[in-house]
Image 1 (cartoon, rainbow, N blue to C red):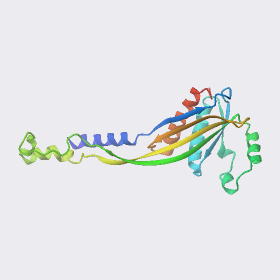
Image 2: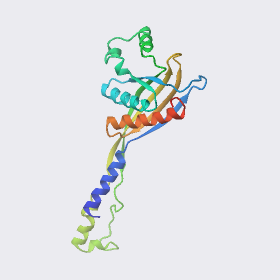
Image 3: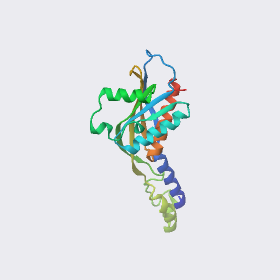
Image 4: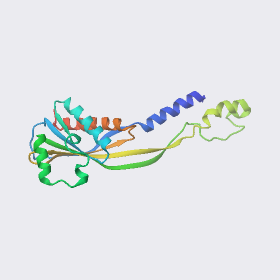
Length: 214
């Protein structure tokens, strides 16, 4: 295998190993509560990481507005230290909910992060030994050199998968009852923006399927 071919194969394996994907792993809907598709939703991401809140809530706001749903970001309603300074009272939260006048409340929570190490196999040449047998490249130095100069390094490598588990709940703003809940798993996002986009894409498709939005 030529060095350039080996390099391209390695890069392909690396990209395949680092590709990001989001899947809905479980979902539940309260069928006892009848409701029309919501036209306004307050987005509440429970994370101390302000940049993560901004990315996820911003992506949700853009995508929901494309479906004619008014989305209100919690970062535009609550100050960054609203929950950390003093635990807000029920009355304070109810007052804010009345002010934003949303039909539903969506909570977004990162519930776990897992790391798994795995081995990515290399090429098919592998360690074979038959110096005077069927492998003719053993017969002279240049034959051996041409065969193994690239393949000798193509023995595989270890990589670490990062899995992010999210939980998303949708509450009716009037009754405050849980209407819908979903858990998702995202594997190896390349950056926060990619993570937010794929996560929101998966959740929006599920919400449309459940007729929670148009």
